Amino acid sequence: MAGPTNPESDLRSTRRRIRDYAIVGLKLFVQRIVIYTAAILLAGAYYDWVTAAFFYVLVLIGEAYDFFVFRNILARRTWRQADIRRSMVKIYVGTIFSSTAISLFAISFASQQSPETGHFMPMFMLVSASIFATMNNHHFLPVLATRLTIYVSAILFVPIYDLWITSAPLQSEVWLHFFTVIFVLGFLLELAREFISSYNHRLKVRLDLEREHQKTKAAYIAKTEFLATVSHELRTPLTSIKGGLEMINSGALGELPEKMSRPLEIAVKNTRKLASLVDDLLLLQSAESGKLSFKFENVDIDELVAQTVERFMPFAESAKVAITVESKQDGSLVKCDANRIEQVITNLLSNAAKFSNEQGDITISIEKMGDSVRVSVADNGIGIPDGSDAKIFEEFGQLDSSDTRKFQGTGLGLNISKRIVEAHGGQIGYTSILGEGSTFFFDLQGARS
Image (cartoon, rainbow, N blue to C red; front, side, top):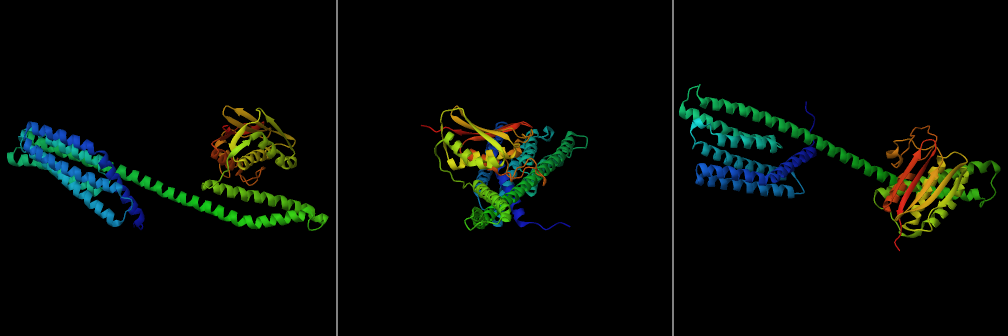
């Protein structure tokens, strides 16, 4: 028992078929005109110019009709069932008119030949037209069947008419011509079946991909809206909780009992971590929606790095790592948003500290490279395995995604950093040796004086 049909899916499929039919029709318009012109010139030169001219006019009328129908189909942007019905009626009218004109043209010149000739030229035209139709008009089986029915009727009419007027015996070549025609028709039907089957398969795959794309797009939008909503809803109460805890921890509300100090420090630390995560989620949502704002200005990159490292030092001390700053250039200006680039540097420093051993060394260097300035953050930590390039900078990317992984984190830092650097027209990357350490770097264009 067949399952229920989806009207919207059927409408989309039929609309796609109509547009494909029109695209092919316009694409082959000039080719058809050239073929018909050559065939009719030959017929006129060897048989009758008047008849040739008459059918040439009919063919041009049919082609002009199809041309404007196809143009209107491709120009249409909104489709209803009524629009589809009207388009299909127009396609059928064009199909019947053009195939009938070609068939009558071939029959008229076959009638001017003797049965013994085999009517090579008119039969060749009809067979060629049939093959052309199976190759290019297979989008709708009824349309193709209509055209082939007219062509096949003409192909059969010519030898049957010869047999009727000659009363030829079975051993004559007139009968051989008839059997040859039957053989060719079998080939045409098989060719039509193959093209129709192939097109239907391609169309089904294409429509399936479009449906999956729509589902993926809807899921992406839902994810983005969810992140934005949750992050905004968390931010206000979290800010209040963080402020209250820090106020209590600072002693502003009175001296704390000794037993509360340590738990309160842990609560403050984790609240800050949670607030940082919410900020990252909001920043990620802004970047994905194209609403990430920047305030570009000329910034001394050496000074910016020094200020960022100074603010990062408490975290470095808690992680028990040392930071060294090296500048291989003499004060360069870059065009950037200082707050955003500071966030990138902080993310790279945090990443280096997290994956370094205790008493490890982190070196942040600034180097002039042509018109660009490169900022590098190198550590002597665990390093990164080969083949990790795709995962390093992806959202929520973790080389170890297990529940028991040693190094915790959301994996947003590097993805956000990549977005910020690329929004500046720069690039970010890394080099690493497993077990020896990693160097993350980003390049920014120098400011023009």
